[in-house]
Image (cartoon, rainbow, N blue to C red; front, side, top):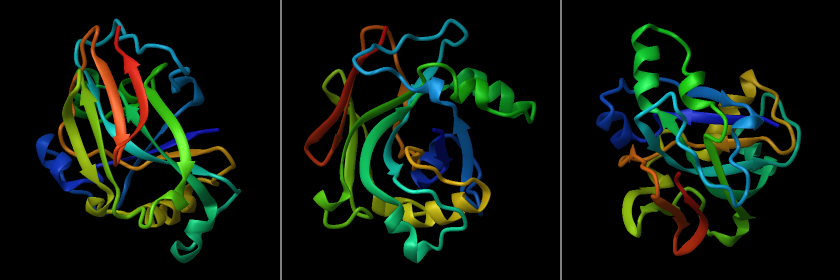
Amino acid sequence: MKLICIGRNYTDHIKELANEKPTDPVIFIKPDTSILLKKQPFFIPDFSTDIHHEVEILVKINRVGKYIDKKFAHKYYNEIGLGIDFTARDLQTKLKEKGLPWEKAKAFDGSAVIGKWVSKDNYSDIDNLDFCLEKNNSIVQQGNTSFMLWKINEIIEYVSKYFTLKIGDVIFTGTPAGVGVVKSDDILTGYIDDQQFFSIKVK
């Protein structure tokens, strides 16, 4: 399986990091070794002093597809979830300044939190989902999928031009504003509407 991540998909997040608004979705890949194992804490790696949380709506692919038309994209997933794309911001900044790939800052071991999965049919409109991240019981990120520059079905169409989607692949759809530093002993809890999808401790 692979984790396909979309960057710069919320205008407010683009602004907070002073990035340029893209004309096409920004894509990067995380390997399966980046998945944080269930019930395990997130350990801050020794190569960064500026790890940021980025909460995101997730989509799990349920059939093989290539060059998927947007109008058929809904057939390629039954479940959605919530997760975190941990980012070594200090390392990412250095890599970006040199025009180098981001993988070391984005795809390191344990950098992807994947919460529980639920049927997309639980929601009347997946393009209008409220979600948030709490840090130590205080909301630090809030978003709604209606503010995505590219909605889920558009993402699937675009990504499948470049990568064959396989059963079990996960798409991280982008993060809203409010990303910030995590510290040892922080508790990070993610919600879609009022339903909790994950809770992890930082060490």
